[in-house]
Image (cartoon, rainbow, N blue to C red; front, side):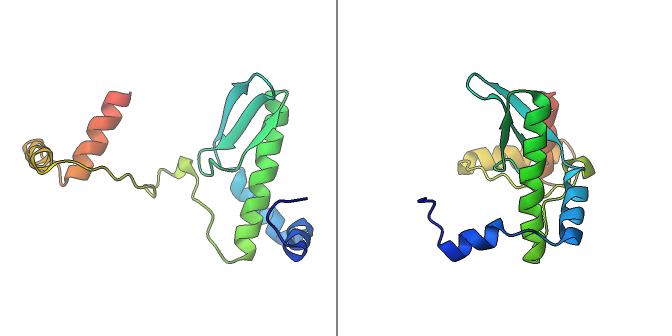
Length: 136
């Protein structure tokens, strides 16, 4: 098997998690929002809003959902073991994601003027509200 892992790393990943860690991870995952898309070969592909690179698939939505939740639970259990903080649930509405855009000097001045004229505290607030209002 050529997965880029050493035998020791592979063995470490395949060992069971402590029950308390797995339970906590499962509780966290229950708060996550699932996303699905149809796939002509697999049936469905799924992930969560909070961890879009952790995926699962299945012939039915139910099977896909189980696989996504299982994979995400294992990733979160691993994070917890390492002392890392899993992503907050998107349902909490925390603004913990960042977008970066490049604009010209003139565009920046125009955006700053529009933000001030609209009574916004910052260009970020102006862009967020304007963009989300347009997005529906």
